[in-house]
Length: 125
Image (cartoon, rainbow, N blue to C red; front, top):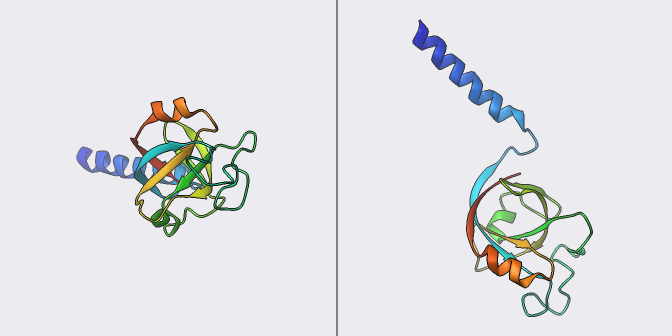
């Protein structure tokens, strides 16, 4: 009987975890890199993302996503939680060659983007 109660308790705990954050119903581990608002890394309009909006708005932290993530529901304007970093908004899209990848916008701070490098992170949306 104690084993049954322990299993039931564990089951209910995981259900509660799943329901605790209904805004972020999906989760995935992706490769995260960083980019800057400079023409050498983007195009002739480095402050405008693929969603046709400014990516340097104050207070909004921005990411670009690979096309395969767009097809999984990470379209323009989607709020994304990067575990350990906080909330971001999808306002840009990466090139077709990238898969399961996000690019974190770091303004014009090239050194900061280089220091970030490439990491695996968990995202939720």
